[in-house]
Length: 54
Image (tube, rainbow, N blue to C red; front, side):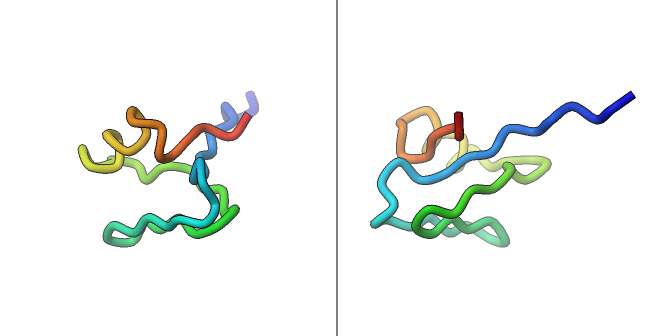
């Protein structure tokens, strides 16, 4: 059975950046979330600063 495709996230505004520990997003970069995302990272997603890639 194929592994489920993981969601990727990016910055809503590519002129901004986000860095926390080993997780960083810069410009148009797209990444999967870390295995255990921090509360701060989850808050950034909830606020719309970081958005899911569609």
